Image 1 (cartoon, helix red, strand yellow):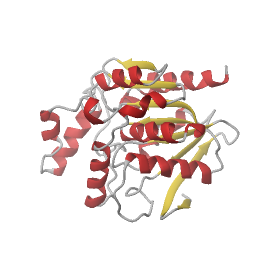
Image 2: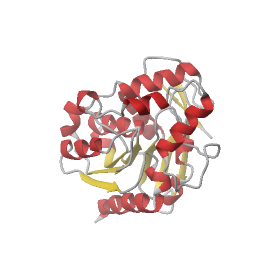
Image 3: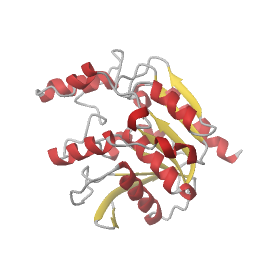
Image 4: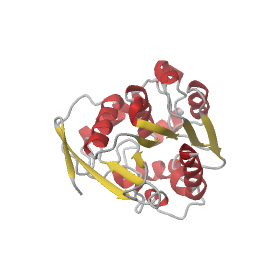
Length: 261
């Protein structure tokens, strides 16, 4: 895949879908490469020109270690759009990608047409954090047990996939230092005071059984962002976009299609 030279980094990115369609920027979760979107992006590529990229510290992007923030990653996203020749895009961010998308919509409103925030939080003292049992499960010293715990937080027992096949359980090529930086930047996110500034029509999506980012955070975002719509998927966990893909992608497509009505 091609790389874009942006400030001090070389950002690996992928353009796909309909080259004549509206642009759709997809922003993945913490400690994950753009492979997070491998399956889901195909739901949009008949209509939209999809854009993904590997965050600093992930995939094939080359960047020096630094004190990364969700806001600095939003600046990277803006640079990717510029380098790709996109003046305005729909933006769909999930998990930490939703936090990055918040800052992109706040700092660069001229770039964001419609905004979708999935399984994410506003951050800061107003966010409702995962409980201690979930935290402990993700700190298990056994990597296999830790991966299994994350898999069960992502998917319900009805899901037929396996941890070995999943592309949303973290980028295996990341260094330990980069993974720690991603964890820290996501934990430090706080856009609460600025959320009312978001001008883009916004859809908030969430699973009601999400224990990684409790669903009350979706309600907070929908209340805080002017005019935001809320769609809660019954029975879904953090990877609602994958396991409940048909309903979730249809909801996003319907929302984005309204931009042209």
